[in-house]
Length: 404
Ligand SMILES: Nc1ccn([C@@H]2O[C@H](COP(=O)(O)OP(=O)(O)OP(=O)(O)O)[C@@H](O)[C@H]2O)c(=O)n1
Ligand SMILES: [Mg+2]
Image 1 (tube, rainbow, N blue to C red):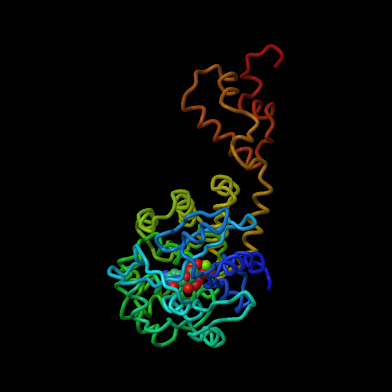
Image 2: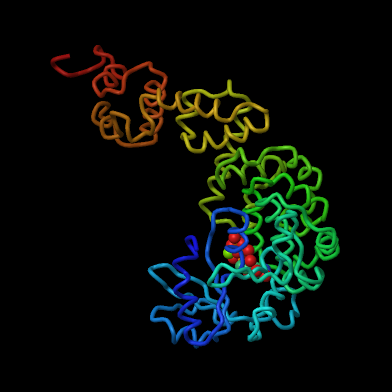
């Protein structure tokens, strides 16, 4: 069996030796069948959480209410979850407590999509009662059993369906798509944090364009933060190759720019993004308001904005205007490399020097003068050398030093 399953096999064997059933389940089995990079390996077992905790020396009770225990095995944590059904869902979210069951079949039956409801035993044999392999080979996302029930159990699954479209390029089955169309409003019950995680994966996937098309077609966008009145703008996103964008900042920056937001800050806050990311996106948007074409780049602007944010803004601008992102970013990198200084602290003089030379008390004049020197250095008017800067600022005839 190939890694990472081979290492995790130790956990399955220990559980079996103590009379329990245990299988690999979920995304790892799906990704193995798809030949995709395998993420976290999850294990489902008939053992109760207390039994799992008793059997392994190192465990963490990560989600006991959902029956999940993390087992630390050879230095890596693996989520081991007791077979369960999720009982009654009264508020369309995953329930606070679950009902443990003793059969794998019942456990697989409560999962979201058939491709995610395949188990694999210790010999690599697949247990696939809902025909997940067939769905994978036909490239179809289909709920396990009744789609309406699955989405009513956990409305986030509608967003998951679209992010899987973006990641895998699969189609939604007709029943699954119809059920989403009928249940979009249930998304209002789901926390923004969970929605944001799925939406970011959706923006990042190789088939993001298809997923945006479905966001509009199903009208699911109506329940996403700040998008309710943005149908026309969302439609324009379908025409762009999102894979050209290479960071979270670039993707959110592109989204905000294309949505013509009057208040990007509030929009990003509504998605509960981290402050650092919000600041980054705002900086990128600021640059995009100033740089309308490549010709607008000057050494001074590049110096002021910094290479990171400049490259991000240039990626978005190039994508929108149909220019080569790589070419333009390379040109920008070269321009940046040619700058004599990259930030103020590299300037050969500081405020203290100015106070000494001019024999004036500290004040706002210092910042003004440093900015002037900075500009002269960046534009190659003077070298970044202390003596040369002094000479440029205070020509010899104005000095009061003896040896001048
Ligand atoms: N709302 C959800 C979330 C998860 N699952 C089930 O739990 C498994 C693991 O969930 P998770 O790790 O969140 O998703 P993955 O399908 O593994 O996708 P990823 O590769 O992105 O982790 C899923 O495969 C699916 O069987 C579910 O039925 N309903
Ligand atoms: Mg997973």
